[in-house]
Length: 252
Image (tube, rainbow, N blue to C red; front, side):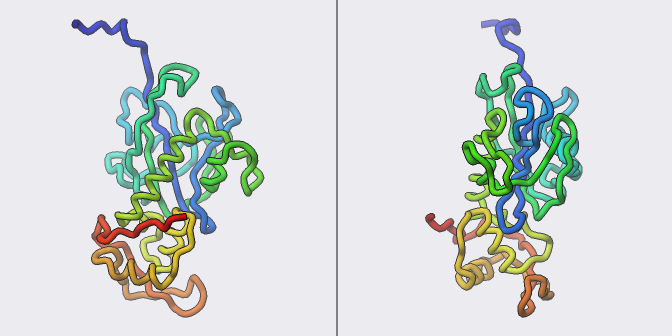
């Protein structure tokens, strides 16, 4: 059957960003309040339309900067955003997801240590870090007094998928170290796992597992007292990308 372009409705491509960090021992996501329609005044994930001369990673880096003030590294090296892990999450193409027209979104997941306070820009009139539990709450208000849900478009689904990706990947990979500074203690790494999973972990068992996994952590030779108490040994991420055995998530 010959190709007939008139048989296909026009559509656009966007990028949406699930940017996660750990702040005050809680897993937080970056949210922007939309400054224009559709869904004006509603909280949403940062993102926007892909320009004709951009690839997807370039569009993601540009939107992150325009709407939040967070600068991405070289878009040709898509594994870095402000020193963060960055990966494509999933593609969302429900015909009714955007009331303006048919829009397909390629969502990205970014993980980083405690990032700076964002600033609003683009079509966002405010931006903030919010606990993911508050953003995913269906109605009512979060712990900070802000109305948390529902998010604009299908962003609650995208955020939930991004959070689950992070929760599952830190079980079998070294991804949890992306939430840490270049040098960190075992206690700081444990608090990352606790924040992402939403559970309390036994400190001794956790220390034994992470220090006993080949290639996971490498001692730097330094110590720190930034957490109070006795000096704690500093580590950096090792070369291992997969954990064997995995760090299984406790059942809640």
